[in-house]
Length: 287
Image (tube, rainbow, N blue to C red):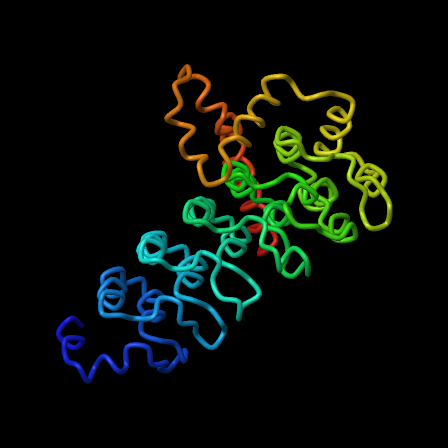
């Protein structure tokens, strides 16, 4: 490929969409999983943001096919972590939907927005934090929290209509889609989430879902309690660092036992359990 691209007349085709996918060469290299071909094409000047006919950028494709190394190559080369405006979905939402927590972590590291303005204001496709609950991927939920996502849409720097806040209620989503996993409730409460959020019908989560479940029991117990001083301090310290600087927490001159706490490492043990149970349910459904 290097030899072909060394010929001037070949470069005119470097961003040409070809069959069978009507996609440019870089997109095809990503689909085929070829890291070296992708690097050669990028070095030769391939458009890193050029979409296929579906509006999918090379990074979007790498994310949806769980090709972590290709994601790193593209992101390090300057790929937009948000994907293309021509596709209403984003690489981050795809990673969350598919339970690709490593991809979520990588995208957040390179600046993906966990509260995408257009997707939240239109509810299409939605809010990554809520998506993690809808698909019961606690590992992705945890990575979003570690990455500095907000717990309440009213905390965003722009105004979100109250009907949208109600529609995207996290506690309602937990009781509807992840009722067997109280860890969602516990972590959401730890980051200052509003467990008494009313939905668009004016109902609290306990009123909307009266049936008993592990998650509901957790909400009930937490509604009557306050967050610990340690928990509040963690929240305030992380706020001071802001989203872009959270990776610097590990360099703080603090007792070694506090660094994992600031990064919510005590919740990591739940990730494997949730993913295993979700996989079991999928297998049973297919059978």
